[in-house]
Length: 457
Ligand SMILES: O=C(O)C1=C[C@@H](OP(=O)(O)O)[C@@H](O)[C@H](O)C1
Ligand SMILES: C=C(OP(=O)(O)O)C(=O)O
Image 1: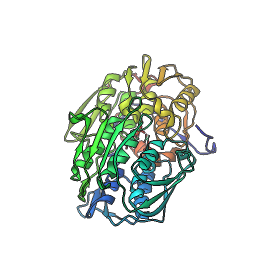
Image 2 (image 1 turned 60 degrees about the vertical axis):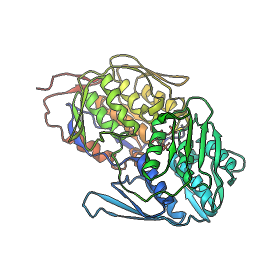
Image 3 (image 1 turned 90 degrees about the vertical axis):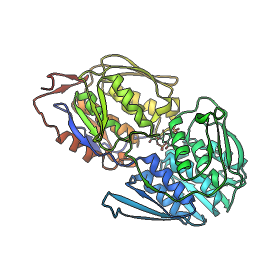
Image 4 (image 1 turned 180 degrees about the vertical axis):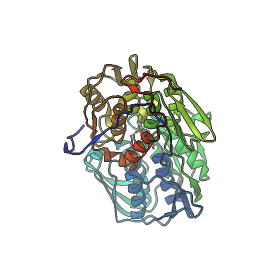
């Protein structure tokens, strides 16, 4: 956690006087967009992304691959289906400078590309990026034959002295602080002379679905990958050397960014449809169907998308979120409004995310009158009647959306620096007020704790 933004920068979170009833089009997935940009940059021919996410993290990624010589042209889809980015790969080159901002995907996925570039590539970013773990990528690249200058700090800022190619081969890493170490090495692995064999040798590996997303997208680019989920050795991934195809890819909506909208249905006892929810996906946000159903409500997936309907009650739960850590802030917000205690486990690594998310959630929910305590690997949340106040966000997009969810049920919540949602969803304030504006039936009202006063007719 770091200092707060100026207090003038406060967003009065709208409260919901009745159950929400809305359909929402959530922008594209950050994780898919940034993997697609990396894979397209490494491909043998041009590729394109349809409906990519346009946000701080993805624009930083587009600028990063451009800095290495790749062309990314932004335009409108000739079929009228939204944005369209055309990527034309080239021999990667330095000297270049990459601004990683506070994007985990940029700070971890780009250094292996830089090792393949011809010339030095300097990496720098927001102050918080200096604190986020990078040793897994730095140590692995050195072991695979790259030359890096990180002043022996094991983190940013640093320079990768690319020589145009990398021997690659076997490497062991401790990825218990971020699954992105594994994804980073796998994404560039096919372009290493000997491919890559990555073995995780530490404590529990978080965010495994995100590694599955990496494997799935590599295979769709024509790469041969052996992975534990296909009967391979536990915690070992192998990527064969070879060319990647340029793809024409439609980016799925970001299911983790769908979370606040589904949470709105849950805490107000209303109904929200998220358009274009994929039938099958590797996105961890798909787990919200199960988690939010357990917390109260039901969901239905059909041609309109995913419709989540709140029951008017919100239940606490005891759950391991290690696979879906990025959902924790939103689940914590809902849990603070529930009718029973929750224990969120398996997310100790969130202390090294955009901010220390466990400390930030504890402080901010307690600042509104809540009763949250940190455990070794998560949070214990005992619901209490909450009151209004400032909800500080520490430059963390998911803290900001969590504050908005609390504000639905608690009058007088002011979210600091709502613009920080621009990391992955710059349109959040408009989407949120549009969702609330769509409420059809003003006769119902919702109150803190998610208890609906009147039933839907
Ligand atoms: O690979 C990815 O796209 C991501 C992996 C996860 O990172 P960690 O494993 O560091 O939690 C997740 O939290 C992050 O939002 C996105
Ligand atoms: C942890 C997150 O992002 P990053 O990609 O920066 O790690 C997140 O979006 O919740």
